[in-house]
Figure 1 (cartoon, rainbow over the protein chains, first blue to last red):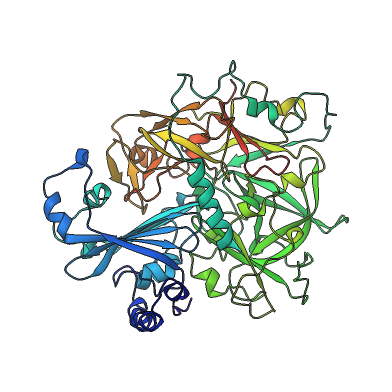
Figure 2: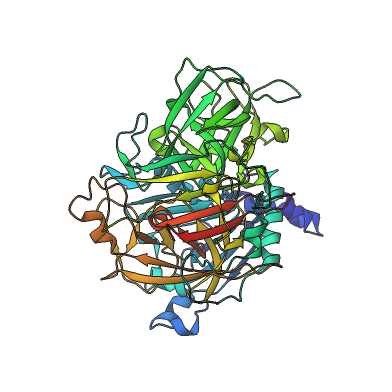
Length: 180
Length: 429
């Protein structure tokens, strides 16, 4: 899907020329907005809104190293026009997305949010050992430090993906699970 | 089309919310606790004429010996479906169609249909072009033309059912537009679908259940934007179009003895309270959301529970059990040192929610289950659960490995109601 100038960016702006400039800048960035690259922005026509926060950690899950981890990444929460949400975990040092999760009534555009990892995911064989987890409701890929998992049923889709090598120092899957 | 609906669905979900619950300590069936929802299902016992049609088919889990498959799939419940050209005896029977309680509509794989058997295309009413359908599943995308067929199972016939023929980007139909193919893996063959087709039994007429977008296609290309065909041309639940026994479905399996079996057979029964074999008087039913999903509590959190025969195993976001990697599988499994019992409760928060339905499920050690002696020929394996590593879903997905030993009741919505009712019992109780 070609990324076009965001209609929503204009719609929500009272300063048309500023919106044009912002959209043009964002178009150049959003062409590379994906896992392993820049975060998604309003330049994507399907993005209805974004909110970037520094992570906080639930008290019960407070773990050694959490304070360090909190400054190591931000969470870019994106709401798509389908109602599906995408959370991008963005490394502070590089401004690159190293993990994503999605959740909502429709699948997100996986080519857009997985970026260069999309082709590997869709082309992956579904089972090397003579049998594999059957059924149309889930698909997984794990190789060369890339993990992608999509599952769910119409109306309730979810999934996640991450690049192991791109995690900031001290940040683990458990860190992300505890981050809010 | 899809986008508008999905926004509406999200709003609806937000309004019904979650929370509350708890309740009795019974597990699975609760014969003394018939809910009002159960009584509302379908024809009820109140004197409607009973159907005499044969209303049950055998469901087999045996690895799915589907066309073109080069390996077998575990925990895939399969049935045979007969397709006929409308009002003729020109029919074909397609085996190994996966019964999916998580979706609606019949999607067949082109590779499984004899090339000599043709079905008329559903066409765009304004220009006569064929309609291409893009149906989303969690594990991929079915892309192909919509056709019309009479569909027969057991003694039941559904006439002129819109059916999708998934063929990916085969030469016989236009390639999927990027608005379809960018969303996941195309089920371009039986190999990637893992079956000769998918029979969604979750709903009857509500097309919004299907997660399908439609396109105006020539033989070589399709429009880039989705269209809205007439509602008589879109995917619909086959069972809901049967002449009788059309108000629900029952999917039932016996329990597996031990850690697995080479094959298991269950039943798919059509209708609720229309014949002696589909009575629900003693079945606790809760109001569901779309596609066999419902509000639930698990680990003291509110979430959506999905009872999905299209998932081979359970998928849990947060569970206090150790995990492991099993060679050959690209997921993270739960591997508790011994079978671990988990409790959940299905609780509907809207009006008339009825009594929460408490359910117990067991998580076994996946390493043991998948590598035990005989595991390479065991295609029916219970108690398998994988971890949602980043807690993406807040869903509790109870799949086929849970459904052994259980009977799932789906009552189709009546009188324009949006959602089904769901019941669950321990088989034989």
